[in-house]
Length: 133
Ligand code: THU
Image (cartoon, rainbow, N blue to C red):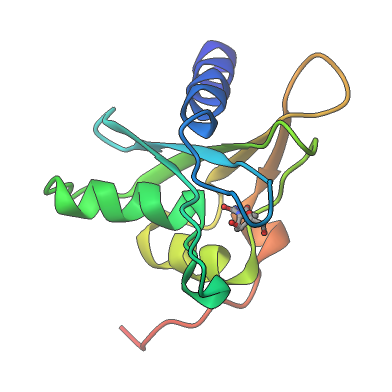
């Protein structure tokens, strides 16, 4: 698992190089692992109308859905060259809540130490909105 965590983080780092972030100058990359082993990446894409910008995490989740992914998320790595521990915004946390296998999924972030920080979705987003099942 350690290898997968570092692998996901290095893929997030790679895709952050594709970010379109001329307004914030804050590139972000995300790489998501699904239950069946599939991996999808995304970067942030900004717009001159700032509010229309989309985060790396939601772009990665949209790519997965567009590619026909039917399984759930088990882990996500997020990386910005501008900031260690680049946490997902509130909107992306709610999106993760929609597609996560469960609330124990791992949020993998670059830490100040050599090894990545691993957080749980339930700890950073404990009361997400869901329709009654
Ligand atoms: N951003 C992400 O893509 N993901 C995050 O986790 C934090 C913020 C983007 C949005 C915007 O393009 C830029 O980073 C600065 O907020």
